[in-house]
Image (cartoon, rainbow, N blue to C red):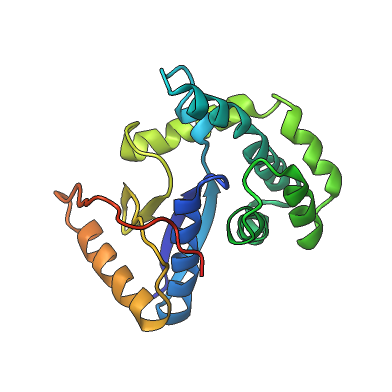
Length: 201
């Protein structure tokens, strides 16, 4: 029986990108179907007292996720997987950074979506919906975590934060452990300090 996993992402986050590559690898070795859903770090951090540099980053981070939401409006949820892959590869693997909106235009074209969807980047039309989406994620995991967020076996949590993303059976084994932890209703947290940055491979 296919196991459904919801994956909540903001395209600017390199850690979410790493976890998403693992999740897609899991689909190859386990009977798992991953559904990609947008969330917004900008909405999450709205009104918070942040370091000025991070505040500026969050202010700019509205732009890519607005385009993602516009793409979903245009083509449905099924476009998100390929669009996120096309954007993330450019932002993260190619090192262009999440402020390079030309990367988003190229990603739209790659997956067959209208390039004019990029106009959503500078429109506040969908911001209230992004806030609502983010509040739905907060309702799942609380407001003290960012992205990625996964829902597995009825439990939602932040993570896993991994680097590099495992492949093959190693990806499946990690999923087995994550799913087992998620299955226990009293499980809340595992954490250790990161010793490496995102290794995109």
